[in-house]
Length: 126
Image (cartoon, rainbow, N blue to C red; front, side):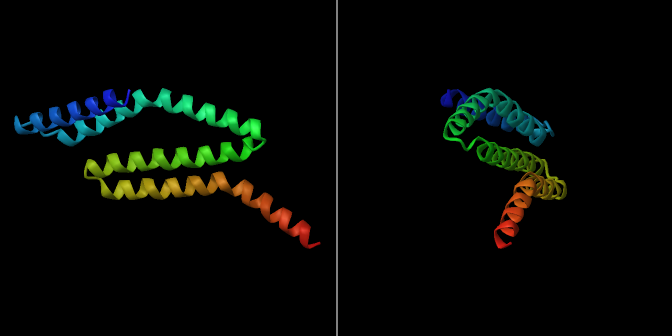
């Protein structure tokens, strides 16, 4: 499966270069679209892996913490990939804004757990 993904990525890259040399001005957009297609093809496999990890974590009794960690990792990757695509398209400002939005989203995911920890700490001090 890995070789298929690498082969498809190389094919997209070579095609983008050939189109660029032929006068096609949308090389960056073509590359970004190709990257999005590759990621969408990989998404089901990533989903299978995530469900296996979460099932294992449920068996250990740490399912809620594992779900939070999975959300954080997933959000980080998705925002990072989106920012990389925007940077490749020459949109550095929007890329930085997307990364900032990703950091805020991660804080929003963590915030309820942070409040629980604060409440626990305060209850221990009483």
